[in-house]
Amino acid sequence: SEDDLDRLLAESTDEKLTERLIFVKRLYKGATLEDAADDVGRSSATGTRWARRWNKGGLGLLMPNFGGGRPPKLGEEQQQRLLELLREGQPWKKQEIQHLINEEFDVEFHPAHLTTFLEKLGLSYAIPRTKRPSRPENAEEILDERVGDAFDEGTGEPHNKRDGDDEEGWVVDEEIRTDGGTVLGFLDTSHPQPWDNSQRLYTVDDPHITRPLVKLDEPAVGFYALSGESVVQFPSNQEKERICECLEGIREQNPSRRILLVLDNFSSHVYEYTRKRAHQLGIDLVFLPVGSPDLNPIEQVWKSLKWEASPLIVESAAEYRALLTELFEKLTAQLSFAASWIDNHLDDYLQKLC
Image 1 (cartoon, rainbow, N blue to C red):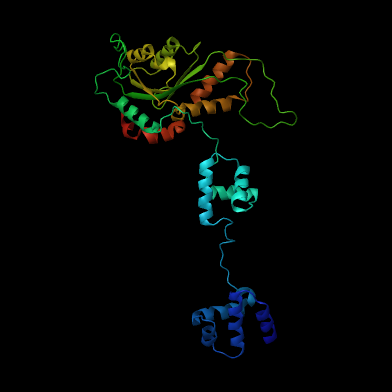
Image 2 (image 1 turned 90 degrees about the horizontal axis):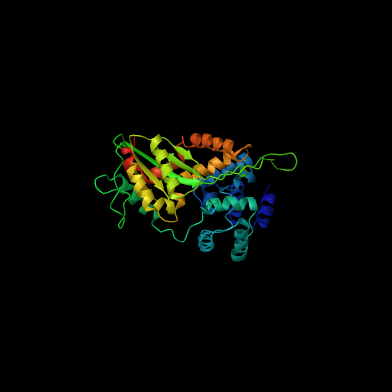
């Protein structure tokens, strides 16, 4: 009724509602649709749409539905300011971010919504990787250059030889052949133990596992091959003589091919003794930039190996070594651990791998 329309108009504090009510009242007063729309500054097309909505559902359909949900608690400029503050003090715990938002913007997020908001803001949520002070800023570029040098066979000089090294002994052993293609792989040492618990397991009572007191004294030296055969060995220690024995084991499993071996700068790896023996075996060493263990994909192999081995119970060191060997062979059959390394550093040389 006209009285109802007048009452709604008197109570309205919404500009959009008021103009629609005036439009409807003018229609009831006998105005044409075009005139009623013109009275509130709207086109006849808008008036036609409003009249259709009124006839179909009354005031409920007449009011606009702009969608999009409620406006964000932090505007665009505030979000940019928040990113600047987070960048200055990173890394952050979620509770610390909530406190920062409260202090700086006087805004409170529900914990569940805060997670969604931070994801939309582009923040990463992961265990921070320790960055060593000795790591160069251009570590990726340095590794690219070293990989390129290793694939360049036209220098004539032993790849592993450095200035100041003894001139004698840099000759490949007579029985070694390297003309059957190229094997590329990654070497690293780990110390997995039977009590390394890295899996969460379900228990009814006290969450524990009763294990025999087994300890593996020897390190595990692994060679993760992208082409060729992967190898895991258990030398008595990491001295240069034992590392060279591991290189001999890698050569034995990968005969007749040149081997490019990516490894870190551990002291027994960089000794002239080790570099010369590697050359004699037809193995060219590609050293990672200092402080850059994350650039060695075998690190992810060790992580997965420890995770899979952690809940398994063994009764002796020999049984544990056999278990590690089985898991290492299974995991290194996958190239996924090195997928990003291949994309970043090997694209130009894939055709050279056998």
